[in-house]
Image 1 (spheres, rainbow, N blue to C red):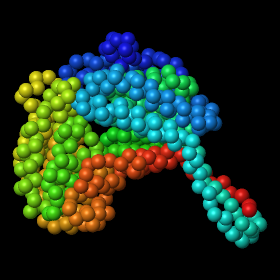
Image 2: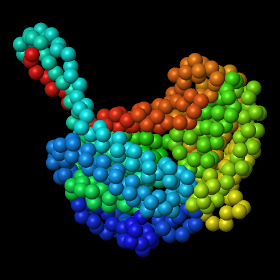
Image 3: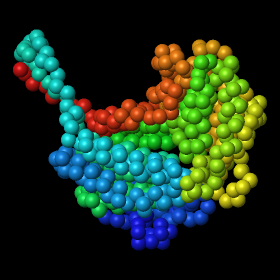
Image 4: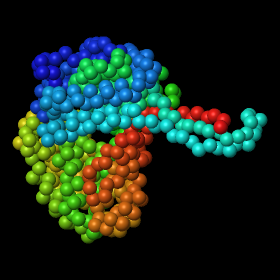
Length: 493
């Protein structure tokens, strides 16, 4: 947040073609999910402003593409350096907008964004070209024979509409725009409507450090129409979206008419497959992250504990012991582990899934609905639902809140089948003290990512999902490749 005053006193604007503009449709209040107070006011873009941002990015693309990679790297590093200086202002704003706890906000919001900008600054000048071995070709009616050489080069895809979610607004946006800018794309940023202010602050810093006009643009809106306009605009070459599967489907449909390239990182329903020989302490440590890491608002979370029946009672008891002891409260307190969820609507949605579990015959072991000591804010405390079957609603659908469901299984084949039984396939986990067994099972899971005995991430690994969890991969060098097109250039030897 700007040091000149609080966010609620600041007039936030959008950046289109190097100019800061007010929203044609006025403003909308951004609500602190912990206090239900107004954090600030975000501009409301019109469809015409979304189109103008796309046009500005398209106009800026040829020059940015020709900009020496070393200069693109310099700007990305300058952005990282300035973010590091300003994070003391940004972190409180992000905590206010998102409800993230102080621990998550200070360690996982801005610092990870800085790391991503630095990582792609270092790679901006790296050649992504692939030399092809000479190919001996016979003469044809098309051309004489001979040795034919070639190279596959990577061209930037063009203008990328980057549409980010509410859980990690700056980090997720950084993960999109850093590799896109590094390879020579221009971008239109569209942050989630619930918490766009810190992303506007990010755009202000980018403008300040010298990114040329039109290379970075930002629009904000609580209406879906401006974002939808980006998905159909002929000035947008690619949509990079993180969010719900339902919206992802609409984006894919909308982009078909213009053959938009797409990176869609969508919903998840992480399976934590706990085998008969698992280290229960390790399994509990990972599964409790559903509660203690951003109130379960994580698409990679192991929200389904699928447990061998011989260890079922032990695991349920261990989780039931942990859940009530995780402090739920003010996210600005350093000892708070569970803050609010993003909105009243999301709280109601989560409570609906808990009730659905009870109605369908599951047992609510720990019920986190409406914690009594929190008079204000959109809180759901850690909730544990046991005795589930694989077909129950809270087992099949993404809840995106601090709710763990437990399903028993009798043999590995059944456990794998249950893990694979949802429409999602983003991130699964296997817990076993036999690493060979765990590895073989991991290879049978229909999931883009599998963790073995750990919920830790490797940010160089390709990240994305199978099935309805999305299309495409980002992360590490894969994050640069996904914002490029392959061009084959062929010549006679």
